[in-house]
Amino acid sequence: MDSKGFSKKPHDNDEFEAIIRANMAEETQKILKIGLPKGSLSEPTLDLFEKAGYNIHGASRSYRPSIDDPEIQLRLIRAQEIGRYVDHGFLDCGITGMDWIAENGADVHVVCDLKYSKVTSNPTRWVLVVPNDSDVQSVQDLEGKTIAAEAVGIVERYLEENGVKAEVEFSWGATEVKVPELVDAIVDITETGSSLRANNLRIVDVLMESYPQFVAKKESWDDPWKREKIERLGVLLQGALNARDMVGLKFNLPESQLDKALDCLPSLRKPTVSQLTQEGWLALEIVTHERNARDLIPQLKEMGAEGIIEYPLNKVID
Image (cartoon, rainbow, N blue to C red; front, side, top):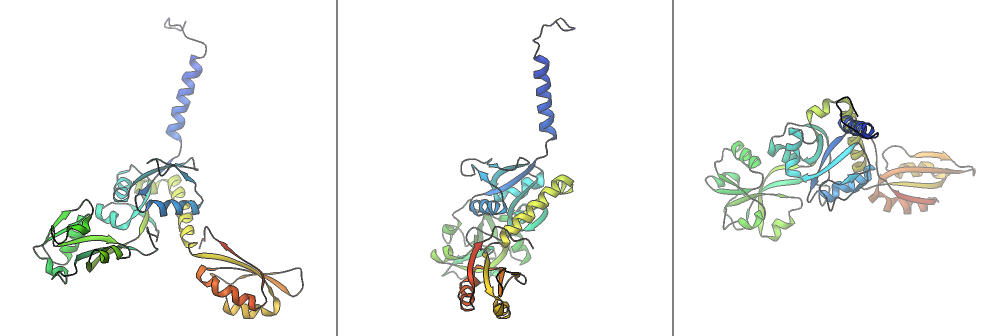
């Protein structure tokens, strides 16, 4: 019996204390909540995290995939919303396009630019588009006309900057099919322009170019632990991007050919040169663009190089 006359089992106190400890641990555990884009940017973003050294599982089945870092929680969210959720504090940080940050007017800290996209390494572009046979040659020709776009805010600011008054209606998607039957022009996002050309559309003007950005909530950036975690992640992500299209080359070279080799070796820095135990031979190692390797390797072979090894890189940290 306790002091109030209630009976209890001997282990009740232990269970109660365990619950309290668990709750306290959950409250005090340091967690960084990161938003990753769901959609066309999802696969290249997950690949980038893998090269940065993180293993993510369940991204194809869940909006809350697991990651092999107990201090990180991931959320897969549409890129259009990530900036707003970071600004409002639902997320500590996230990756989204600078276009959507501008569209939402999100007040966030930009940790770093991440120059990649869904198809190439080129930026995505928001472009003003009309049919090939349209009379519209410039934005001024759209005075009093109707434009469809998903990024309404970006378009409205563009029109205001150019002194043009036109109606801008929100498009839920399939924007390309709306001209000319439903609207006079559209503003759409493109990377290569191939889809626009296939639909007999032409670009009148480019409103903005956009790359993904790694952004943080300002309060999270001011928190010492979160800031350090975010900064370290930024370094790794940028290192993974820097390694894109880069390779390492290792080879043995007759010492007499060193000067000739140095003249033709493009690299981030001067190559690493080591003396081999076999007299008259050197070991060299460089980091260079993959496209250079196809020309370099035959040249090195002609100089007498042996044991040439080309290997991929996950990260290059400046």
